[in-house]
Amino acid sequence: MPFEADREVPGLIVKFGGYPLHHGGVGAIRSLGRLGVPMYAITEDRGTPAAASRYLRRAFVWPTSGGEAPERLVEGLLRIGHLIGRPTVLVPTDEEAAVLIAEHQDALAGPFLLPPVEADLPRRLASKQGLHELCEEHGVPSPATAFPRGYDDIAAFAEKARFPVVAKNREAFLRRSRPAVRGTTRIGTREGLLALARDWGERPGVILQEYLPREEAEDWIVHAYFDRDSTPRAMFTGVKVRSWPPHAGMTAHAYVVDNPELADLAARFIKRIGFTGIIDLDLRYDRRDGLYKLLDFNPRMGAQFRLFESGSGVDVVRALHLDLTGRPVPEGEQRAGHRYIVENIDLPALLAYRRSGYTTPHAPARASGTELAWLAGDDPLPFLTMLARSLRPGAAHLYELWRTNRRGGTTRSGG
Image (cartoon, rainbow, N blue to C red; front, side, top):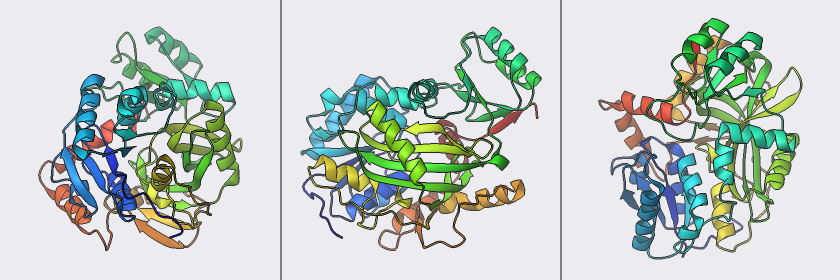
């Protein structure tokens, strides 16, 4: 490998909320741990796959919901920083963590190393409304979207809308005890929309969005790391073949595909808004008008980030650590044709997609190599722990909770 990481600077995986079967955190532990970087992680308990990794020096067991007072979460992070005892690179795995770190970076900057992002920017980007407004401001295509302030606004929208439409929680990154909709909800008729809206209260926390038909679209992803000048130090593009839940959830199977147009769109947008750090973008290519439309902006590493690695051995988490420790990030082309499979969700996704007839023409006919989310010959215990945890009583409920909280499944109403 043409670079060496600073082994004196640890990494800390920061996650809030109960989603123990998270392969992204395991991937980050392995990625930096294989370079000799001491790795620490916040975990729900000692029986999570992340806690079982041979590359983890210590798991800090800290059950959270993500809805605690920010002061309490900051205090907990500072306590962990004191226990580690030296400057540590923070690697958030969810929006709550990314937003909290950005908004309290002055308090955290002593014991921790973090990108100097504008404090309110991650919250705006993680918010559906904030992202849509930034897209409009900077000329980035996104689905047509309405932000109703009450039932009357929804009724007026229903009179003019072309159905089906999609409903999403306006602030999807904030965990709620009773969200208006469960994840991405496709609504087929005016009557179905009005029936749902009666339960949304006086101030519906939803957005209503045009539906991009899956038979006329492809799902693309961009993962990148941007330095303090919003210059990309690692940039990757790929196509999502399957997700779980189907068409609206986490990536189950994806390929690295070179897409200079998409990379340029992402780089220009990031430069204009001045973002610093890791990004995970979801875009849908609309074949009807030839535009890539930005659906989600995750201001942190994505769970599938290990799909992407350059020829010089750099992924976005390694780029983050190298840059924040003052080391150059080697350039290199991405591994075109490489694929990524999440073992525990790809089989149900495969069966669902076969029934739907969805295709991704840009996916390579044959993979140049495969990265598995869980199974690794040098670190087998997270895979075994994942299997054991998936099969034990209550696992289905835990996964449903994870799915709901992490921008989960697609439901339908009125057709």
